Length: 140
Image 1 (tube, rainbow, N blue to C red):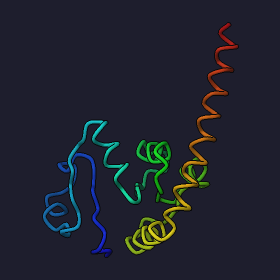
Image 2 (cartoon, one colour; image 1 turned 45 degrees about the vertical axis):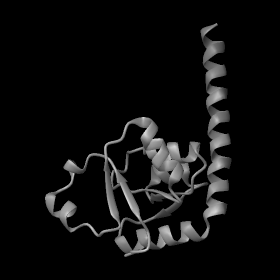
Image 3 (cartoon, rainbow, N blue to C red; image 1 turned 180 degrees about the vertical axis):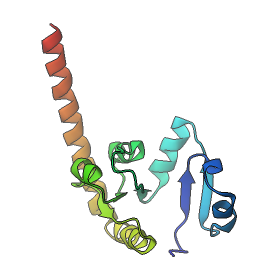
Image 4 (cartoon, helix red, strand yellow; image 1 turned 135 degrees about the horizontal axis):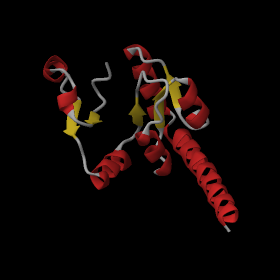
C-alpha cells in the first residue's frame, strides 16, 4: 500500500518482531530512537505526521508535537484522541486500508490540515496560558 510514500518510523525497532522488520517494504525506513531535536526535524520534514495506536488511554506525544509544528496530522480514531485533536486531525480506523486512505486524504488536503493544526495549536496555547494564570493566582 502507498509504495509512492516514504514512511519514516521513529522509535526503537527492537520492539518490533524480526519478521516485521525483515518483511517491511522498501519505502519503510526505521530511523531508530531519535534524540528530541532529530525527532522534531523528522516531524518538520514530514508532509504528514501519522500516529497510530490501539491504546484507548494514550495521548500521543507525537500528535502534540505535530500540532505544535503546524503539521498535517492523521490519528487512530479513539475517543480521547478525537476529543483532544479531532478539530485538526484526520481520524481513521487501524485497518491498513483505512490508514492508507487517511494518509492519501491528508496528502491531498495538506494545506487545510496544516491550517487546522495551527488553529488548534493557538487554542491549546491559550488554554495553557489560562491554566498557568489561574495557578499563579491560586498560589498568590
